[in-house]
Image (cartoon, rainbow, N blue to C red; front, top):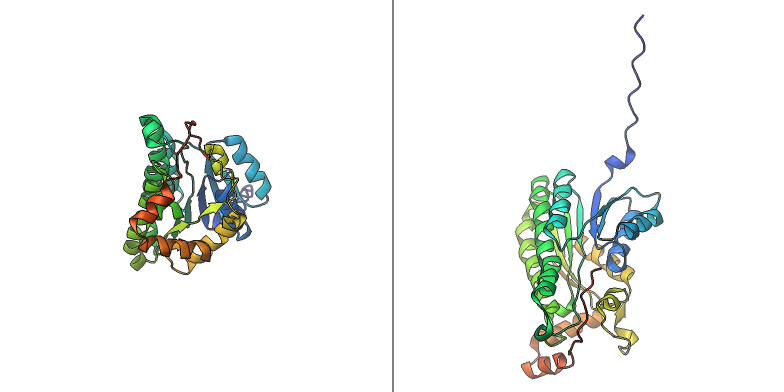
Length: 274
């Protein structure tokens, strides 16, 4: 008699779930997106530099299926590794959230610091978006949220290149969003204002004297972002206060913009990454 064939392994139920990739996932807006998407039964791939913190976030999200992918997106090796993963396991959703700021004026800066900011805030956003949108367009569905900032609509700190990078993210997302919309894909720039995260502390930026009414929570920003993406928005400014502010800035005379940016003198602090 022939032996009974070995039973086939049971299919992994997580394999049928849609995949969401979140960069800068260990804190703040990125962690809030991860919590929200885990509650919506996504299979998560979380990206950040710190492997230990990634594993801690994954443990907090259990029993949601989570893969951690430690990578420094400010380096070519890091961004290439994540782009390769995206090609091998195409996601339904990409959240480009990782970013840094520099607490220094351009006059006091150095090429290495500025190039690191641009590689993380601009180049990584472009590379990872490019890694996913052609496949999404071919499949006829998918979405990308590029976390930008209200800072991209003005010059809040004199001599800072952070706002210039965020202006690029917003403009880029608009352009790609219009290009992929006919293919059933959504790309959106999410533009919050001040958010209570460790972002400013890590950059050494003191905003302790800023009024509480201007601060948003990461959970509010993430929920607003997903809801707005699904409604087909291409640029979303979070919170009505900031929408009014952005509308005013778009028509503000140059003298007002200069007055806003005049208080942005930056101290000489080393850059830190989320």
